[in-house]
Image (cartoon, rainbow, N blue to C red; front, side, top):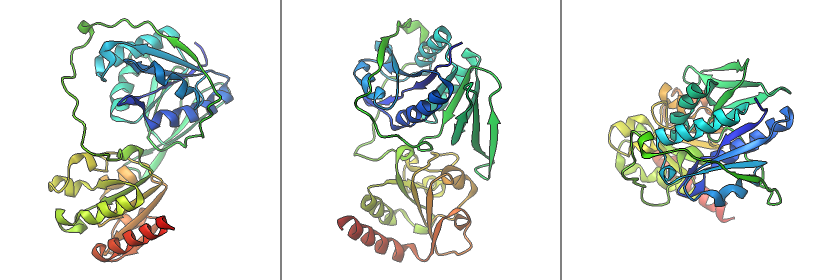
Length: 329
């Protein structure tokens, strides 16, 4: 087994997802400690043009697997191709993101590869031998578990936005290797018939630097504009609590929480959200949390870095104007 560290470079819409840059930045740090080579693995169709972009973020080698059947993600196709590559090259470590694709793919790869796997990791490091130690939230974010791999191979699924991205270096280049792909329609039990993309230029919650979320304190869907106005002023993503999603005020795609999307932005603004445990599980790892609620005893204030006890209908318009003025200056 080599000491190599592999990063699954997930793509979307013909572009590399931000989480891949986060993993490469952390992977470069680990490779310098362990002496392994940092390898990015790129799956898809007509994606070879993205290879050198991965080099700018630290990849020394890019393994490109292209096939028409990899055009859109499917569990069977990606598991087979990446699983075959792992068995052939046998790296020490594979890093994936805690995305919809990452959560679907990681446990399947671990089972086929015979690797230990830890999911939803928020911080990790390695020793000189490359063995990884991990911190990950447990009990809906109320505590952190410390774990360590005792053998290779090891698979680490990392929460989006948990790692910082180092500045790209355009002078870096990587060896690009085209991998042979053994894949046929018979290998795929389910096929993607259609991909529907949400209209507009909505920022992906799991990759957002700033998120402004609304809850039941807004009293009705007609007041969600207060949240979207503040989000636009920040240039942020808009989120929502499960309560208002279940009430039909807003689409599920906006839900933050244990049963929605788990996020780790630099700034999370909770507007009229009480702080139910399932919501806290989805956002408590945010770097800075600002809570706005008229109930001074709301649980959200226990995790907030800054709290505003007040009426969202008065606070949000004032805050939006303040952000706009600050941005203008």
